[in-house]
Amino acid sequence: MFTAEHDQFRQTVRRFVKDEITPHVDKWEAAKEFPAHKLFPRMGELGMLGASYPQEYGGVGADYMFHVIVADEMGRCGCMGVPMATLVQSDIAVSGLAQYGSHELKEKFLTPAVAGIQVGALGVSEPDIGSDVASLSTRARSDGDDYVINGSKMWITNGAQADFVVTLCRTSDEGGYKGMSLVVVPTDTPGFEVGKKIEKMGNHSSDTGLLVYDDVRVPKSYCVGQEGKGFYYQMEQFQKERLLGSMLGVSMADDAVRRTVEYCRDRRVFGEPLLSKQWVYFHLAELRTELTILRQFIYHCTERLIKGEDITREISMAKLKAGRLVRQVTDICVQFHGGMGYAEEYPLARMYRDARLLSIGAGADEVMLEIIAKLEGFGPA
Image (cartoon, rainbow, N blue to C red; front, top):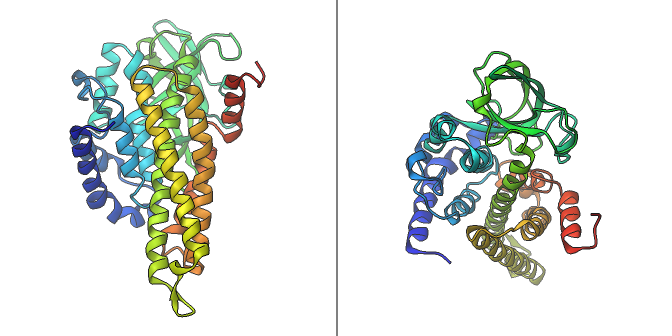
């Protein structure tokens, strides 16, 4: 499954996370933003922002397991905010662009994103729609060689720092999932505005924006792939987003178990280490077992993705399981820390809050269940 190149890359990413991210997490969480324009260029130098992309756009043409390794190692940094923002930069914002964009469009936006010198974001969700992508209302009106875009996007990771937003919008009057296109919008375009940064329960170091498009004019050449195919491109992108999000969640939960084992080994209750209590070590053993099984399933999904196979069914299952398991793990780990688990000076409280998003973002649990039931043949057609 893993080659010597994979292992070497993992060690590089692990050292970077340990030396250049983890020591700053508390500061970035308190500031409710991390310095993307300073951190991403360094990550770009190490190949962390798009190893699978072609060399002509800054990648090395490697397999997608390199992206999964980044998610795995980033999950151990002590928060979910910076890792999530990184995955938006490397995959979520630009995977459609990398696969379907024109050469000129990729040179202009993909190459600087992979290098980390421009920050990217993806604009899909809106104030009134989240998982129901077919109901979005942001519209791009045709005007000669340009689109004029009006609408708003909400819950946009990297939204406050982004240099460009790959925006899903309607380019025709067809309803439902038809007539949507992905259009790259530079954030210095007149009419584009960050309406506000959204205060969240967790993931504090990741800035999340409400974006406003008021007669934003961009060239039609900024459309990714074919006009009207944006919904289909976005559905393909969701599979990678769910894959990487699941890996990130498993990694963070595994780190929570590790931290809990260390705490319970040192913490003495009634004259004995807390870890000596069967109730405690049985629970931790069971959690580690479930995380290991899920990790291997995610690797299996990645291998199938690399082969070009459809992983919609399997990755929907992984995403559903990851969201629920991560919540269970962090809840039990907080419990075993006792009062310290509830205190902000320990990372478990942060992990507990951050974990909750995985069952909501990139398709809620209920959406995953709909997909699974449909593909199993007993859900609605």
